[in-house]
Image 1 (tube, rainbow, N blue to C red):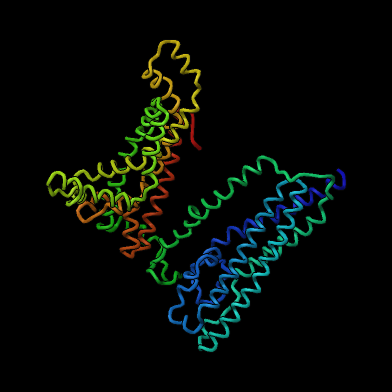
Image 2 (cartoon, rainbow, N blue to C red):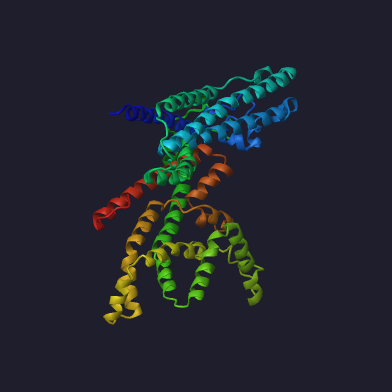
Length: 477
């Protein structure tokens, strides 16, 4: 191996350390326990570095009357420091991504990584300025219990920034010199991964990171209290689901509503596919596009506005009753609640759900239709024998995902349409968790219900996937 090649190999190993440190920093910005911005106990303990940078109200949530002694200036300085550190981490992340490219891209990535590490480390000085502000104001106000300190998260981030700086600097000396006019390039596999990366980060932040909240299920927690081992109750709330008659009755009732509404959704899951097939058969292009747009728009209307529309039409003094001269409360009447919710859900989503089937139809080989025409097949026969079989794989994948999410049929729709008359029929599992936790204050019990729902959903998804693999020989995972 040539000397230049061996140095490049060493540099690639150094980059793995840099990427690992940057990845750790990116993950930690969402964790409140490792927040370098919490330099005093006045700052909300539930704030992460990310939320400290974007929300001044969150930073001052736990201050209370002591804000008179400190003022908002130190908190603004904390937010500025958080923003600087967040920007530094973003720059380091950009440099780490550029290290996946060719030599020229690596060298530019080195500059970004070094600058990002310096910005991240330099934000420590801004935090110290904020700390001195807090110290002066709190000491003057005799709030000695709230005096600033250096949080553990500060050492963690400084260590990660130092690691990125040192190993990037070593990589700078290891890389050979550029030869000729080389362009910045990156292998396709890395380019595609980086395109996907922001979405993976969002999924992690909003789907997996909240699982840390499952710890509330093991504590006797009340809103506003601190979570500590004094409130540890083990599996008390898990056993209550089965031992307490009132809780068991409520859970069984909402499970019934959830299963029925999800079952109706699954039973009518073929409607978007049929709508897409019929839409595809419209020969007039402008009319087909108009129908597609009109049926897709309701998907982007919030359920609050949908309820406002429903109220204007179907309430006791709404449009229908005004025309008919009656006074029938269509919304408050509990009869047919499940089917009403199904109808509203289909009206809102059928056009949007049909898009994937429209795309699937465009992927069917046109020669199949031409051959069928030559054989004398009519439009109905081509739809049944070509279009439907071509869409079945797509339909099966969506069906399996619906089965896996059978316990997660949303909350917004049922929350806005819920009233005292239909609550026993419309309260689904997600709405029950919301009512139990936020309205009833039973946060620990609602966490247990939500946690159990998630586990059962995962089991159902793997079960449906296994059945699909057994029957069809294909799986979605």
